[in-house]
Amino acid sequence: MTALHWFRQDLRLADNAALLAAAEQGPTACLYILDDDTPGDWRIGGAKRWWLHHSLASLARSLDAIGGRIILRRGPAAATVTQVADELAVTSIHATRLAEPWWRKADEVLGDRLTLYDGDTLVPSDHITTGSGTPFKVYGPFYRALTEHLPPPEPLPAPKRIEPAKTIKSDRLEDWNLLPNHPDWATGFTDWQPGEQGAAANFAAFADHAAAYATARDLPSEEGTSRLSPHLHHGEISARQVWHGLADAKFRKELAWRDFARSALLAQPGLTSKATRAEVPWRSGKAADADFGAWTQGRTGYPIVDAGMRQMWATGWMHNRVRMIAASFLVKHLLIDWRRGAAWYWDTLVDADLANNSLNWQWIAGTGSDSSPFGRIMAPLSQSAKFNAADYIRRWVTELADLSDADIHDPVFRPAGYPPPLIGHREGRERALSALATLRHG
Image (cartoon, rainbow, N blue to C red):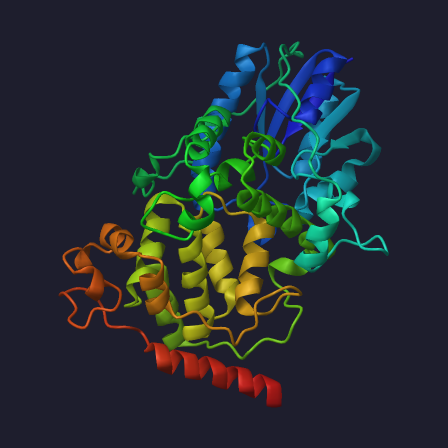
């Protein structure tokens, strides 16, 4: 009796109920599928492809150490799982339950042949529902309902041994060409260590200063964030492992928001592109395209925005506070459709997560069922000074490295090569509020 474990966004051995169940049945085959077809526009972005290559290499080594082997295939997920299952004559297929629409579609196609296990969230999403049994769309009542199910179950151990199934054809990871070349734009990604061991090391490092998280998390110049987001997205560490390994209440609420994002995506599969509230008229045309290009390149003339966008391009990650500032600047100061920003983050972030990315952009744009009002406009210059971003700016906007703390947030005299602001803060704010007024009275 051969079992098949289908790895997706659970690239770990520990606290993996699906893998453990498969291994307990007898000979087990482990499969990962690169599906660029089913997700459509949401196929894995460039930065995540870099991460995926190294994470799969790490997973292969971990499986090898306990007797297992990873089978790599490429193609539409449901059809490819079926093909591999038929080749192996498996009696059961096991996988972790996920919220993304393309995984759910594949799960439906596989039907009774597939057994799903919880493990992507603190609490199974179907346990946190409204009185009518539907997923929540608003965070407040969701969180109150979630707390009734906490703490989450203790993490499960990794299987000590995997009895290998028969050998069948596997793609070579190198042939997937997930790593960039000509040019290699990922040279700045070397601080990351993808994989389960890297996740554990990153978590241990964060735990040493987690007591300062509540205040340090908002300071871009400090190492106050966990940097666990790419490990959590790829499932190299589970939310339950983090919860039980770290008692910080503020960080636990971040895990709760992650659960909520999945609940919101289940309730609104169109969250990625469909607004649930009326939208302001977004700018389009050559001028808007030029502004969008300047934003992606970190050339807006707002140092805090430019620092964040350059950090993201160089490292595949951006400080969370700066993500909000940069996103707000795009949709409010520049009046550019939030979908364009979401697509750019998706392609350039190693932690790009469909639920979180979509929910957070709709929150900033004021278009989601639980979002910040559009009229609440972040002031990039005051945000930069308030959160002591001077050293952060010096690191990423090197043209400004010699400026004082007092001057660097809004340079009066700009060094050669650094652009003027695309739009003044007051002008941008008034334009955004005018667009909002048009919407209200249109």
